Amino acid sequence: MTYGVFVHRTDSIYDDSPAERYQFPRRYLGRVEATVGDWIVYYEPTKVMGARGYFAVAKIERVVPDPTAPGMFLALIEPGSYLDFAHPVPFADPDGLVERGLLNEEGKISGRAQAAVRSLSPTDFDRILAVGLDDRDALLPRIGAPPLGGGFGEEQAPFQLEQPRERGLSLTSRILRDRVFRRVVLRAYDERCAISGLKLINGGGRAEVDAAHIRPVEASGPDIISNGLALSGTAHWMFDRGLISLADDLEILVSRQANDPDGIRAFINRSGRALAPSRASDRPHPHFLTWHRENCFKQ
Image (cartoon, rainbow, N blue to C red; front, side):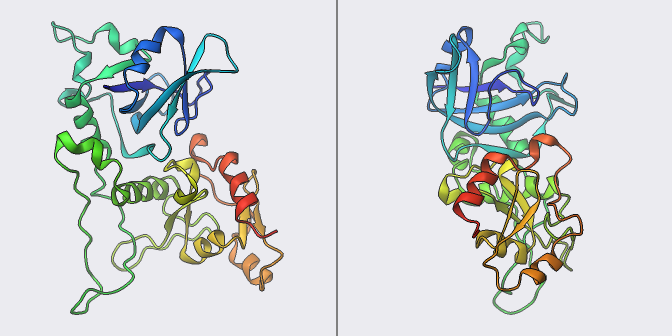
Protein backbone atom coordinates (compact mmCIF):
# COMPACT_ATOMS: atom_id res chain seq x y z
CA MET A 1 0.00 0.00 0.00
CA THR A 2 1.13 3.54 -0.69
CA TYR A 3 -0.20 7.09 -0.62
CA GLY A 4 -1.05 8.65 -3.95
CA VAL A 5 -2.09 11.78 -5.80
CA PHE A 6 -5.08 11.60 -8.16
CA VAL A 7 -5.52 14.52 -10.54
CA HIS A 8 -9.16 15.59 -10.90
CA ARG A 9 -10.67 18.46 -12.86
CA THR A 10 -14.16 19.83 -12.38
CA ASP A 11 -14.42 19.88 -16.20
CA SER A 12 -13.05 16.34 -16.51
CA ILE A 13 -14.05 14.13 -19.44
CA TYR A 14 -13.84 11.15 -17.09
CA ASP A 15 -16.76 9.78 -15.09
CA ASP A 16 -15.42 10.88 -11.73
CA SER A 17 -17.37 11.45 -8.54
CA PRO A 18 -14.61 12.24 -6.01
CA ALA A 19 -16.44 10.92 -2.94
CA GLU A 20 -17.44 7.71 -4.75
CA ARG A 21 -15.20 6.77 -7.68
CA TYR A 22 -12.28 7.78 -9.87
CA GLN A 23 -12.26 6.63 -13.50
CA PHE A 24 -8.92 6.02 -15.25
CA PRO A 25 -7.44 4.21 -18.28
CA ARG A 26 -5.47 0.96 -18.14
CA ARG A 27 -2.05 2.65 -18.27
CA TYR A 28 -2.54 3.83 -14.68
CA LEU A 29 -3.82 0.50 -13.36
CA GLY A 30 -0.63 -0.52 -11.56
CA ARG A 31 -0.22 2.84 -9.86
CA VAL A 32 -3.84 2.92 -8.70
CA GLU A 33 -3.78 -0.67 -7.46
CA ALA A 34 -0.76 0.21 -5.31
CA THR A 35 -2.95 2.67 -3.36
CA VAL A 36 -5.73 0.20 -2.51
CA GLY A 37 -6.31 0.23 1.23
CA ASP A 38 -4.49 3.53 1.66
CA TRP A 39 -5.13 7.28 1.37
CA ILE A 40 -4.87 9.46 -1.70
CA VAL A 41 -4.95 13.23 -2.14
CA TYR A 42 -6.96 14.87 -4.93
CA TYR A 43 -5.22 17.57 -6.93
CA GLU A 44 -6.76 20.10 -9.33
CA PRO A 45 -4.13 21.43 -11.77
CA THR A 46 -3.36 25.12 -12.07
CA LYS A 47 -4.49 25.22 -15.72
CA VAL A 48 -8.10 24.91 -14.45
CA MET A 49 -9.77 28.27 -13.81
CA GLY A 50 -10.07 28.80 -10.07
CA ALA A 51 -7.95 25.69 -9.41
CA ARG A 52 -7.86 24.54 -5.79
CA GLY A 53 -4.55 22.69 -5.84
CA TYR A 54 -4.61 19.76 -3.40
CA PHE A 55 -8.20 19.92 -2.24
CA ALA A 56 -9.34 16.66 -0.59
CA VAL A 57 -8.33 13.30 0.78
CA ALA A 58 -9.97 9.87 0.40
CA LYS A 59 -9.22 6.20 0.94
CA ILE A 60 -9.20 3.70 -1.91
CA GLU A 61 -11.30 0.63 -1.17
CA ARG A 62 -10.82 -1.40 -4.36
CA VAL A 63 -10.33 -1.22 -8.12
CA VAL A 64 -12.76 -2.73 -10.63
CA PRO A 65 -13.17 -2.67 -14.42
CA ASP A 66 -15.66 -0.03 -15.50
CA PRO A 67 -18.68 -2.04 -16.76
CA THR A 68 -19.81 0.87 -18.94
CA ALA A 69 -16.49 1.71 -20.65
CA PRO A 70 -14.18 -0.95 -22.14
CA GLY A 71 -10.53 -0.38 -21.26
CA MET A 72 -11.41 1.88 -18.34
CA PHE A 73 -11.28 1.17 -14.60
CA LEU A 74 -12.80 2.60 -11.45
CA ALA A 75 -11.04 3.24 -8.17
CA LEU A 76 -13.86 2.96 -5.64
CA ILE A 77 -13.64 5.25 -2.63
CA GLU A 78 -14.18 3.75 0.81
CA PRO A 79 -17.56 5.06 2.02
CA GLY A 80 -17.21 7.83 4.56
CA SER A 81 -13.52 8.42 3.89
CA TYR A 82 -13.69 11.43 1.53
CA LEU A 83 -12.98 14.80 3.15
CA ASP A 84 -12.56 18.23 1.58
CA PHE A 85 -9.65 20.22 2.97
CA ALA A 86 -10.37 23.16 5.25
CA HIS A 87 -7.74 24.99 3.20
CA PRO A 88 -6.93 23.92 -0.37
CA VAL A 89 -3.16 23.52 -0.59
CA PRO A 90 -1.30 25.29 -3.43
CA PHE A 91 1.12 23.43 -5.67
CA ALA A 92 3.94 25.58 -4.30
CA ASP A 93 4.44 27.88 -1.31
CA PRO A 94 7.27 30.28 -0.36
CA ASP A 95 9.41 27.26 0.58
CA GLY A 96 8.99 25.65 -2.84
CA LEU A 97 6.97 22.66 -4.04
CA VAL A 98 4.64 21.19 -1.46
CA GLU A 99 4.98 17.80 -3.15
CA ARG A 100 8.77 17.53 -2.91
CA GLY A 101 8.79 14.12 -4.57
CA LEU A 102 8.24 15.84 -7.93
CA LEU A 103 11.77 17.29 -7.88
CA ASN A 104 14.52 15.56 -9.82
CA GLU A 105 18.19 15.32 -8.84
CA GLU A 106 18.84 18.82 -10.18
CA GLY A 107 16.08 20.22 -8.01
CA LYS A 108 13.78 20.89 -10.97
CA ILE A 109 10.21 19.70 -11.57
CA SER A 110 10.30 16.26 -13.16
CA GLY A 111 7.96 14.78 -15.74
CA ARG A 112 6.11 12.99 -12.92
CA ALA A 113 4.21 16.23 -12.35
CA GLN A 114 2.27 15.56 -15.57
CA ALA A 115 1.01 12.16 -14.42
CA ALA A 116 -2.67 11.97 -13.56
CA VAL A 117 -1.89 9.30 -10.95
CA ARG A 118 1.35 9.20 -9.00
CA SER A 119 2.72 7.89 -5.72
CA LEU A 120 3.12 10.24 -2.75
CA SER A 121 5.74 9.90 -0.04
CA PRO A 122 4.62 9.76 3.62
CA THR A 123 6.50 13.01 4.26
CA ASP A 124 4.71 14.83 1.42
CA PHE A 125 1.38 13.33 2.51
CA ASP A 126 1.91 14.64 6.05
CA ARG A 127 2.94 18.07 4.77
CA ILE A 128 -0.15 18.44 2.57
CA LEU A 129 -2.54 17.27 5.31
CA ALA A 130 -0.98 19.53 7.94
CA VAL A 131 -1.89 22.56 5.82
CA GLY A 132 -5.12 21.26 4.34
CA LEU A 133 -6.73 20.26 7.63
CA ASP A 134 -5.61 23.24 9.72
CA ASP A 135 -8.89 24.91 10.77
CA ARG A 136 -7.56 27.31 13.40
CA ASP A 137 -8.97 30.41 11.68
CA ALA A 138 -12.46 28.92 11.26
CA LEU A 139 -15.55 30.54 12.73
CA LEU A 140 -16.28 28.25 15.62
CA PRO A 141 -19.69 26.67 16.26
CA ARG A 142 -22.15 27.89 18.80
CA ILE A 143 -21.75 26.55 22.29
CA GLY A 144 -24.98 25.19 23.71
CA ALA A 145 -24.23 25.58 27.43
CA PRO A 146 -21.91 27.80 29.47
CA PRO A 147 -18.89 26.19 31.11
CA LEU A 148 -18.89 25.25 34.74
CA GLY A 149 -18.46 28.43 36.72
CA GLY A 150 -20.55 30.52 34.30
CA GLY A 151 -19.65 32.86 31.46
CA PHE A 152 -20.45 33.01 27.79
CA GLY A 153 -17.13 33.87 26.17
CA GLU A 154 -15.48 30.47 26.21
CA GLU A 155 -13.08 29.54 23.44
CA GLN A 156 -12.93 26.20 21.69
CA ALA A 157 -9.39 25.04 21.02
CA PRO A 158 -8.55 24.10 17.44
CA PHE A 159 -8.45 20.41 16.72
CA GLN A 160 -4.87 19.13 16.76
CA LEU A 161 -3.79 16.34 14.46
CA GLU A 162 -1.92 13.36 15.88
CA GLN A 163 1.76 12.85 15.28
CA PRO A 164 2.62 12.73 11.54
CA ARG A 165 2.99 8.94 11.41
CA GLU A 166 -0.57 8.62 12.76
CA ARG A 167 -2.09 11.26 10.52
CA GLY A 168 -3.91 8.74 8.37
CA LEU A 169 -5.66 7.34 11.44
CA SER A 170 -6.72 10.86 12.46
CA LEU A 171 -8.68 11.16 9.21
CA THR A 172 -11.31 8.80 10.59
CA SER A 173 -11.96 11.00 13.65
CA ARG A 174 -15.54 12.26 13.65
CA ILE A 175 -14.45 15.30 15.66
CA LEU A 176 -11.96 16.29 12.97
CA ARG A 177 -14.32 15.51 10.11
CA ASP A 178 -17.22 17.51 11.59
CA ARG A 179 -15.06 20.54 12.18
CA VAL A 180 -13.49 20.51 8.73
CA PHE A 181 -16.84 19.84 7.05
CA ARG A 182 -18.34 22.80 8.89
CA ARG A 183 -15.45 24.96 7.81
CA VAL A 184 -15.74 24.22 4.10
CA VAL A 185 -19.55 24.36 3.97
CA LEU A 186 -19.80 27.67 5.81
CA ARG A 187 -17.09 29.14 3.59
CA ALA A 188 -18.95 28.00 0.46
CA TYR A 189 -22.15 29.68 1.69
CA ASP A 190 -20.43 32.78 3.12
CA GLU A 191 -21.71 31.81 6.61
CA ARG A 192 -25.25 32.51 5.35
CA CYS A 193 -28.30 30.26 5.87
CA ALA A 194 -29.26 28.76 2.52
CA ILE A 195 -32.97 28.79 3.41
CA SER A 196 -33.54 32.15 5.11
CA GLY A 197 -30.63 34.02 3.54
CA LEU A 198 -29.64 35.44 6.92
CA LYS A 199 -26.01 35.85 7.94
CA LEU A 200 -25.76 36.21 11.71
CA ILE A 201 -22.57 36.26 13.78
CA ASN A 202 -22.97 36.11 17.57
CA GLY A 203 -21.13 38.18 20.12
CA GLY A 204 -18.32 35.65 20.34
CA GLY A 205 -17.63 35.88 16.62
CA ARG A 206 -19.28 32.55 15.83
CA ALA A 207 -21.51 32.03 12.82
CA GLU A 208 -25.08 31.18 13.82
CA VAL A 209 -25.43 28.51 11.16
CA ASP A 210 -24.72 24.80 11.09
CA ALA A 211 -23.21 22.64 8.37
CA ALA A 212 -25.97 20.15 7.60
CA HIS A 213 -25.49 16.95 5.62
CA ILE A 214 -28.17 16.50 2.95
CA ARG A 215 -27.71 12.74 3.13
CA PRO A 216 -26.70 12.08 6.76
CA VAL A 217 -23.45 10.41 7.73
CA GLU A 218 -25.53 7.67 9.38
CA ALA A 219 -27.04 6.93 5.97
CA SER A 220 -23.63 6.80 4.24
CA GLY A 221 -23.65 10.47 3.31
CA PRO A 222 -20.13 11.72 2.47
CA ASP A 223 -18.34 14.75 3.92
CA ILE A 224 -18.29 16.58 0.59
CA ILE A 225 -19.44 20.17 0.05
CA SER A 226 -22.06 19.10 -2.50
CA ASN A 227 -23.68 17.02 0.26
CA GLY A 228 -23.83 20.02 2.58
CA LEU A 229 -25.99 23.04 3.32
CA ALA A 230 -25.39 25.98 5.63
CA LEU A 231 -28.55 26.16 7.75
CA SER A 232 -29.67 28.11 10.79
CA GLY A 233 -30.80 26.07 13.78
CA THR A 234 -34.48 26.37 12.83
CA ALA A 235 -33.89 25.52 9.16
CA HIS A 236 -31.66 22.60 10.13
CA TRP A 237 -34.36 21.23 12.45
CA MET A 238 -37.04 21.48 9.72
CA PHE A 239 -34.74 19.95 7.08
CA ASP A 240 -33.79 16.96 9.25
CA ARG A 241 -37.44 16.31 10.10
CA GLY A 242 -38.59 16.48 6.50
CA LEU A 243 -40.71 19.60 6.84
CA ILE A 244 -38.69 21.22 4.05
CA SER A 245 -36.60 19.84 1.22
CA LEU A 246 -35.09 21.01 -2.07
CA ALA A 247 -35.90 20.30 -5.69
CA ASP A 248 -32.97 19.75 -8.05
CA ASP A 249 -33.22 23.40 -9.13
CA LEU A 250 -33.01 24.34 -5.41
CA GLU A 251 -36.67 25.37 -5.11
CA ILE A 252 -37.56 25.09 -1.42
CA LEU A 253 -40.31 22.52 -0.91
CA VAL A 254 -42.65 22.76 2.09
CA SER A 255 -44.28 19.61 3.39
CA ARG A 256 -48.07 19.39 3.27
CA GLN A 257 -47.83 17.79 6.71
CA ALA A 258 -46.36 20.92 8.31
CA ASN A 259 -48.73 22.42 10.87
CA ASP A 260 -47.75 26.00 9.98
CA PRO A 261 -46.88 26.10 6.26
CA ASP A 262 -47.48 29.84 6.01
CA GLY A 263 -45.06 30.46 8.87
CA ILE A 264 -42.45 28.31 7.15
CA ARG A 265 -42.90 30.20 3.87
CA ALA A 266 -42.49 33.49 5.73
CA PHE A 267 -39.16 32.16 7.06
CA ILE A 268 -37.90 31.31 3.55
CA ASN A 269 -35.97 33.93 1.59
CA ARG A 270 -37.98 35.87 -1.01
CA SER A 271 -36.62 33.98 -4.03
CA GLY A 272 -38.18 30.72 -2.82
CA ARG A 273 -34.95 28.95 -3.72
CA ALA A 274 -32.02 27.94 -1.57
CA LEU A 275 -28.94 30.08 -1.86
CA ALA A 276 -26.14 28.29 -3.69
CA PRO A 277 -22.34 28.47 -3.57
CA SER A 278 -20.71 30.37 -6.41
CA ARG A 279 -18.63 27.38 -7.46
CA ALA A 280 -20.81 25.01 -9.48
CA SER A 281 -19.16 21.85 -8.14
CA ASP A 282 -19.96 22.94 -4.56
CA ARG A 283 -23.71 23.24 -5.15
CA PRO A 284 -26.04 20.58 -3.73
CA HIS A 285 -25.82 17.54 -5.97
CA PRO A 286 -29.12 16.15 -7.34
CA HIS A 287 -28.03 12.68 -6.19
CA PHE A 288 -28.14 13.78 -2.54
CA LEU A 289 -31.22 15.96 -2.96
CA THR A 290 -33.12 13.03 -4.47
CA TRP A 291 -32.15 10.88 -1.49
CA HIS A 292 -33.47 13.50 0.94
CA ARG A 293 -36.79 13.89 -0.90
CA GLU A 294 -37.30 10.12 -1.06
CA ASN A 295 -36.18 9.27 2.47
CA CYS A 296 -36.79 12.33 4.66
CA PHE A 297 -39.24 14.73 3.10
CA LYS A 298 -42.83 14.35 4.25
CA GLN A 299 -44.82 14.73 1.04
